[in-house]
Length: 632
Image (cartoon, rainbow, N blue to C red; front, side, top):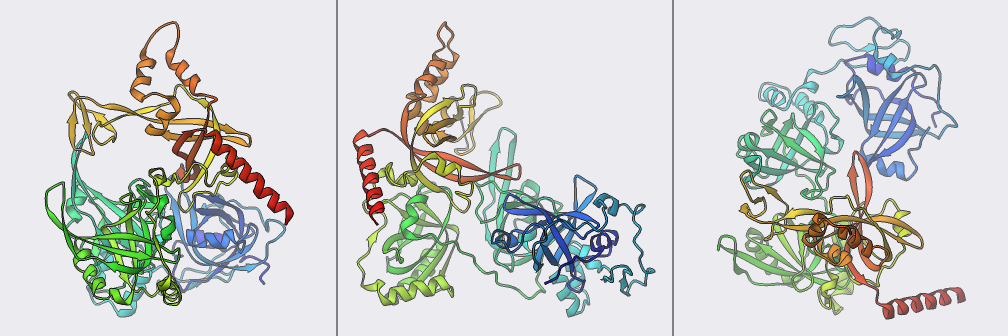
């Protein structure tokens, strides 16, 4: 195991502008200092004993940090990293894509000679001794460190269009391979990165949509992009950019893209598993990689067991499913309400190891294409993996494909092989039940029962990682201890679709969802309340239906009380009446990102008054379980 860092490595890298991320460059060893999480990534200071520079591990290295392989004050060899500028400051940072642990954790920070990064980045203050500058095609070696530096290849700083232009010339195959190797993987991108070029395949293309709001009219469309590693990102284009690139982006083709920007993805609208979303403007560059060897990106799935589908009913989150085909219906034609067009539909029934079945509706081309293929082979019980399904509440739980859904028959994956083995050995002889059978209306939106998954508030507040991967649901009994009277408690909503409306320029209200103007609107609750139990307290968010049960009146009625004048403030009185009343809540716990930090968000999915008989039975059951445990 190595016990020392590479001397003066950081200073050499920062002082040499030709230092790049080519695979031929030397690998340096640094000490990890001040390791801390920022969102789903970890930042640290790379220390070579004399100089420190800010650095960040990409999310692919997060599991090694969580497992303890990469630790604070440990030594790592940087195998693949880039040097980027922090746009708001005249400083640089390392983005580490790949590294390996080369030494155990040291007792303290290595400090051979104190020197700041600013000093290292200032040419006037640097005292590094370099060998004479060699010709452009020669290598040069730092005398003090022995680090051999290759001259920067010009194509590394070029845009997508420049890369494609050179490829169309007489570039040698080896040069083309080098250029291809220099594109950035999607997993390495972040909003603070400078120039980058990506090579991606268009795996889904949306339709051009026109919108109209208080700021005017425009058009928008988006595409889903997948790189060779299977990482996905959604790219959105507005107005001029949308018109410029709509015809250029073709489903299934591979492109080089540069000069785009990234921002945190809006969870309400994102369609892929990525913390960021991309925006392309009219100055972005998109070039088809027609002369390149095409790659087929791996489809990544995040399967949800059939027995857990109830948690996703009527939620905006799309799910992936794998199951054994039990039956396939003939194609039927359904009249679409929006335009009276007849569209094909086919239902397939899938089962998995939870011994539950669910009906999946295939629409349009999936119904007539893959659906017919499944009908022809239904007697062989094929395994089907489906990406991006919408979960509805028809017959308890139902699934539907959408335009971006992807269906794979008999995929070559460990999950598929395991499922097929289970079905052949025992599953085909088992009697299975539908996931929707026996589910009551209260089972929707994760509200199975107010008396299942009962926890104290401390169970939620003491586990900050709850809800990181997907929403988790609990039931809890608590008192409402405080309702902030000066908070924004409601929003102006459309009476037809309940979505937010904006005041029109002349009069009335404009609904973006309905694309209509209305003379009146309604108020719908969106408020936060503090709840307390014997173990602690926390803030929870409640929406219209749940808030009405808590306050005992509608938002319109409460707004009237707020505007009334008199000796007695009826508005304050109404809020006080709701406090210190006990309720049983069904809540979801998720993680929201705010200013680069993840925060826990607890949302009310259901609220009910205390059922004293049910509470008594719950206590008796708890006592019985504890007695049994003490006798073991």
